[in-house]
Length: 164
Image (cartoon, rainbow, N blue to C red; front, side, top):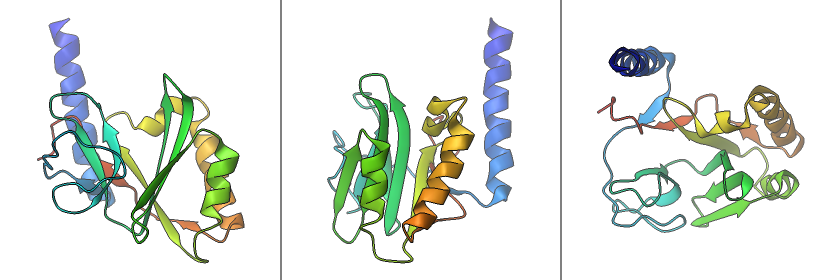
């Protein structure tokens, strides 16, 4: 069992180090937010887009640092969840239906760019496995149909403690 934990830890470090040169933007600086709530401001004034491990002693916070951000994940309680953050409006909206999410994307100004926010190690988006790749391609097509594009690089929040 010890060897499995050691190998898993080493694998996480290797994955993190391999992704850094790929141009991914890591949000690794620690943002201490007392009881973070989605849609409120963190200590630096950025909008809290998503909270990884809510209820934990030190939950990791994905703060909206681009004009528009999205988080797509599978919730045990609610199933598929889609989050859209709008920096100018200071709003975060959550959707349980993909169709409603896409309709909200269509309300963004033409030629807007949305950035996908996720976490390292096992991204929340992989909760849709084995459909995650198909959903991602569908998401890009649906964004294009709404006049919105997806940023080339996602924003990654380190939740494993390996990137400082």
